[in-house]
Each structure stands twice: as C-alpha cells, then as structure tokens.
Image (cartoon, rainbow, N blue to C red; front, side):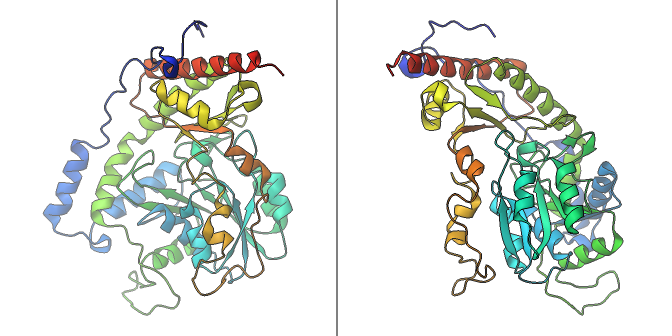
Length: 417
C-alpha cells in the first residue's frame, strides 16, 4: 500500500482519507413490493392460512440442503426454539460464548437453563474449544456455537468435545449467512441451527428467524413451540407443554422470500470486499484482521480488526476517534455494550426473574471469568462492511486505517522511554 508519511491526520488538520461518499444503499425493491402486494390481495396475514411463509421455509431449507425449516418471529425466538426442542430439564447448563448478543442468551434463561460462558480465541473472537472443554461439568446438556460476525467457529474441535461429552451443539448463525468452515456451510453441521432476519443482518424482513434441522421430531416440536403448542397439523388445540407465540407473519414471509434471491450475491460481494480489506491490513503495522480458519469463508456481517496498543501507543478510543475523523465510521470496544455479556447486570445481579435468582442457582460470573474476551474490548475496532460498497471505498478505508496506525506508531516511538 502506497502511503505518504508526511500526510497529517484529519484530527490535525489534514485531509480526510475517505474522500468520496459511500454509495446509497437500498435493500428492498420491486420483488418485495410484488410479493407484499400478493399477501395484501389475498387478504391473509396469518402464516397457517397463507403461502409465503411456507414457500420461504421450503426454499431456505433447500438452499442449505436441510430437510426442514421452521420460520419464527426473530433470531432470538429461533435460538430459544432450538433450545426448547432439546427438552432439557431446568437447571441444566448450556455452554455459550462470552461475546454475543443478548438474543442468543434469552432463550437459555427462559427455559430455566444456566448459561456457562466460555472464553474466545483472541484472534477470531469465536468460542475457544479449550475453554469450552474446561467449562464442561456433569450438568452440561448443550453447547451453542456462535459464528461471530460472519466468521466460522472451530467446529471440528467443538463437535469432538460435544461428542465426547454426549451433548448436542446448536449453531447460532444469526450473523453467518453463507459462511463456511472447511467447505461446510455454517448451519449444516449440527442437528439444529438458528438464523436471524432482523434489520441488521445480511438479509432481513424487519424481524424474523429460522430453525433448520433434518430431524422430523425436532421439526415438529419446533413448529409447536413457535405457535403456543397448538397442534395445527392435526387440527387440535390441546397444548401439552408451555410454548410462546413466535409466529412469522405472511408479510414477513413475503419480504424474506424476496430477499432470498439476493442472498448469494450479497455474501459473495461481502467476502470479496472483506478479503480485499484483510489483504490491505496485513501490510499495516499495528493492526490485524480476524483470522479466518483454514478452508473457511468469512462473509463479513461486520468487519473487525485488532490493535497492537503497545506499538501504537494509544487506546482503542483514541484510534477510533482518529479513524472516525478520517471519514471511516467505526466503534471501539466492539458493539455488545462494551463488555462481555456475563458482565451485564442481568448476570451480575442474577436478576433474570426479579425477586429470585432463578435459574442461576449457585452460578456467579465474576470479572476475570474470560480473560481473552475482556481484553478484546480494549483492543478491537468494529466497522460495517456492506455489499453495495466499491473497491474504491475499501481502498480509502484501508488508507484511513494505515494513516492513523502509522501516525500513532510514529508518535509513540518518539516518546522517550
């Protein structure tokens, strides 16, 4: 990468590195409108009486080579449903990652299960298999493998740990459309996987989710769980377990169906642009992109890179502020509240259900529980990366990162020890 060392930071009065505006983004078009119009013309918004949700389920399962897809109201609902159909007794422990969204944890608590947080790999921010193994106990009943930011987790190691422990793995693919681990699609390596269709994902319908499985019994239980345990397939209304109302509407189904036609192009383009930025960052001292596992494919729900704070002589906040001034939007401390999820008040105060400490039992979550995760919030920068961006956008972003990194490192080297 060519770089003029005399160029000042924008914060110092120099020109911004991002000199051209990002192109406008439009996520919905004529197909979305047409399918929504068909729903309105049919005058049926309820999934069971309509056709769009059924067609979306069929096509999404087909896209992933799975036998069954059950659509629901959100990615949170999808993870909750996947846990519920395992029929785990309350008090069971579920091992999950310490860097995730609260939506990946809500279902654990509502099922009366106890989250056990494993640490992350410092160069991927995905579950560290060694930490997962250390978290195993006689009460472990499941593992949730989250593919963070579009990067596949180390599934071979996690699946082997689960096999030895005799517990199932759920893949949380909310951020991982089209990502691959050793040529296997994320969402196809376990009995159950969960996806999200909320506004921020690769494709979206406002809010929605899906559960994929090849197991007919799990499919049936999932269909019951998202619909109050009403046995609509049999024409019965006689619930035999407690279940919420997580139905996807025909309006959501229509938009989700339209979005499927764009999915392959979206993930291909994000991968192309993300790899271009990765290559540029490898040439910039003091910064490192996420490590992609050998044979894996990153689809860049977000773009993350790590700072060598000692070399740069700056904090993540200082780097972020300088990069924002260059016209490159970014966030320090990742985007999950500035802390590993176990430091959220709901876990620190064990207040999932006010007035009790259920379902935590004697489980507590002290600071220092997951050192790599806690350190990550001091060292990583998070950015968006969108499929409608151009190669020039990526090159200007890389220029901005290089400019900030070089100036900060030069300033640090000039400070007397």
